[in-house]
Image 1: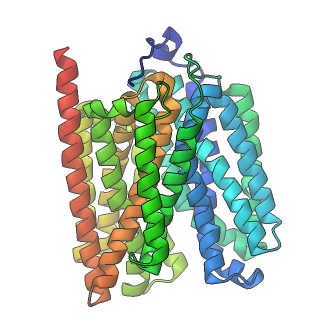
Image 2: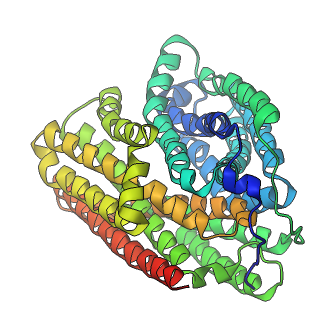
Image 3: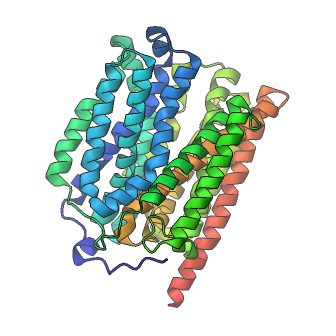
Length: 468
């Protein structure tokens, strides 16, 4: 049942007077989540030694967070719309900070896995509320730049995480990588309480508890299937069972949301070509991005022979280009000049060229890989914020939290699917170099397809809106 929303108030169209300061605060909150995820990968050897962790333990330390966060993104966004985005942002910081403290003091793998799951709850709240608040406090003409900066923070976490983690592990014990979250979380909490305005849906719809349960179980099962497939085999019992559960539960979720008068996820959104185009583009760009980064780490270490730290440093140009283009506002100006459809198609084409460069030229040396990283950075810096803004602006402002949850779900699904599919391409190849090359080319094809689909649908939506 489609949702109707009253026109946004004048304060929303003009923007909050302290909106740029507030954006810095919510970006800081988002950074705590991103740093933690990238830092953990560096700590794997230390955790294996200090906690006597098995390979399965390490996998659960990483996956417990992803499974919980992915499962709760839509529920977290819906809760923020209903109960208040500031309240949920504060709750997310408290839960994430408490989980970080428990993780730092954990004396067993079980305790650390449980703490990571708790941090996933906080991460889901932070991921949805930060983007929803950004959409509420900025006027429409400034939203593309604001979302670009929000997206660039993701890249900053990606680039800085391994470096910070390496420094901390070189001077302190492994628990310090979780303790560094505490001062950031506390500082962000104080600033959020003092600066961020409260906002929530004025409609006060009844909570969709059945929808929340179905979406949580369905998305968690889907992510578990994607994570487990490459390691255990796509035809193994655990993968098949979790896959069937995911399909059945998500099918029940769609049926339920179409049946009730107060759906958490209004399926009527898909009648909007702008929303559908943004969804298709977001999944395929994250498919290519996630899979390509998965292959890139192996390419740098196994083909070009770099150590883990040096390989991490050599991926930094990707993140730096994204940060530079978004923080300077260049990406937003490109979107303003080309329009969203042209920016998304052009950006994803450039990104695909970067994947081809790494696949074809990368094995000859780092120069081809560097060119590819720069091109991927340029494409991602322009296309990703434009797609996020297209998705968020196609949803009524009162449902901004749900929109942010959908955006996060698409990222999790696309990235996980990219790792699974391109990983399968890698393992099926006769030679490592061939598998890495073929995987990058498949990723490039997916990205171009996403750009074309998104561009066509967004242009159609723009034409229909202009005709009105």
